[in-house]
Image (cartoon, rainbow, N blue to C red; front, top):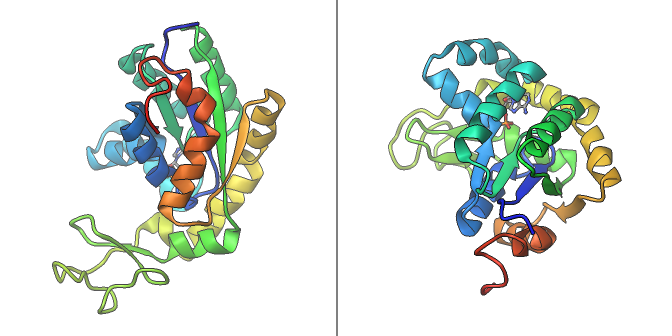
Length: 231
Ligand code: AMP
């Protein structure tokens, strides 16, 4: 068996919890968590040309062009080295990105081990994202599920809460529509390769994580150093 780290792709609509679950999977399995949304937001914060280019798409809820994303992920993967397991969150988002990822991995003798589809109804996702408000310090609320005591104000710091441009209701509708149109076809892409596993993502964070871990179990036990220990 190859000694290279395994690659898991998280699929699912915006707001389904790929970020939360991806961070945890990465932490608990010792894999790199690669969120293209986070990479783009960091570029934006740092005022790089990439951030500048990406901003207009992100604020509108549209996808950043494939070429930009493929280069970004290629560079990032090269920096990780071939032995590291990776959980991708938010990439690939188009069939073209998925094909490019397969080609890049094949060049290193690697391949996607599993694509986990996190699934929840659009109505739940809409509330999860459009209800999100964050304080400058990073505390995140949700006006439907976890509201602050005073409307628009952080409980802890008293700062005014921010409603991100890409969390505005109109933009959320665009993001969900873009997902259905150009990202959902990836379900068929990975299904045809026998790599798709489905995870119900309506439950609480721990339930979803347990289901996800079970679903990527084959990929997990194949990883060097993690095989069959504990959990
Ligand atoms: P996320 O945090 O994953 O929802 O990403 C936030 C935004 O970044 C998306 O709405 C897109 O504008 C952009 N983005 C993130 N990942 C990708 C990707 N793989 N392809 C194109 N655009 C992306």
